[in-house]
Length: 160
Image 1: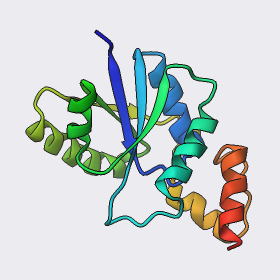
Image 2 (image 1 turned 120 degrees about the horizontal axis):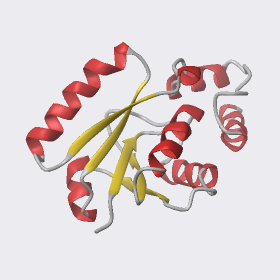
Image 3 (image 1 turned 180 degrees about the vertical axis):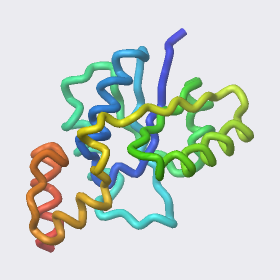
């Protein structure tokens, strides 16, 4: 049986913090799926297809990682692929309350699926997709925040 972890998020855009967690998780699980969640309540700068392409290119060196797009409950997607672990990243105490609520909701919906909270590397605590977009919007340096290819895509997107 393959041990699959699913790392869901909007990844709009993927950051170096996300990549750090994905790299670390990929060493533990047979397969890691980066799941791009689509929510009508959270408008995105990049389309799901653009995010998928950016993530795949950013993670091309990690063989046991795949990227998928899903609209719906993460636990339903996980049942479809027979995955048992949701991975969530924690940057700071502020993330904990939200993640605890989500983990408990998922546990109620799917008692057989566990949530694994992974602490962000301290050098990435301050990075968020929202913050990265704001820096890009004001023409700030994206060095050390996102992969170079994502920085280029952000700059191009902001010029429109």
